[in-house]
Length: 290
Ligand code: SF4
Ligand code: ZN
Image (cartoon, rainbow, N blue to C red; front, side, top):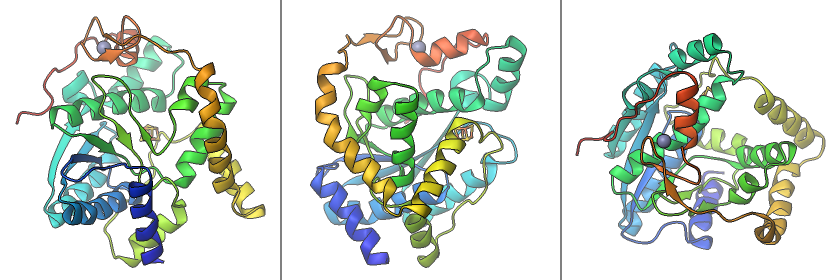
């Protein structure tokens, strides 16, 4: 089992040319099993291939949940001898996620916590990875996450986001290319790998986890139980369709957000749009003092 996970991880990197020798790779580590496993496997890969690895943890500010996972991320990075940077919503955007949720209720935006969390985390991770001089930004997305994302984009009829899914995504200037080396490994196998290797991982569940994401996850788990290999087939089918999607996805001109200067296709980036609706407008320019 251990060898099988490691083999598929190496295969994913080599087959899709996710990392080149000598590159500096940033890995997003929440402290959960997927990101911790991804960091351990990348640490080994980078030792062999002479790449540099740096870990980034986002502290969204979720009381009673993120504190412990942050400590676990730090312990793992320390054990592996990897540089570890923590970037927080509070420092970057002037409020914790908990604070934003309260403001969103007050302002009746109708948006759930995961919308703020997802958009802002992607943005802060990209900014941090860029400031750290990373060539790639790795995340611990596993097969279950990827199948879930494919289904969600079908349900939302979001062709652009669907098209961006894959083992790597290299957007335009200002974005650090993202890679997902665990994308073909089922969540259960990642969890078992962490267990067999005796890794210290955070097992808590985010208090905000709810809504359509959990419904799609439960649906896919039931499907997989009744029809084994379904998640993998969803992924394979998507890969066959993806090359044909290009003609249907409109291209866009890359601009700089008028408020924060981050790359965007509109006048304002999505992060600033969300923040303005809850009266948070400033954004920290330098997250990391090198
Ligand atoms: Fe963020 Fe939602 Fe995930 Fe919680 S469940 S960490 S709020 S995206
Ligand atoms: Zn902006």
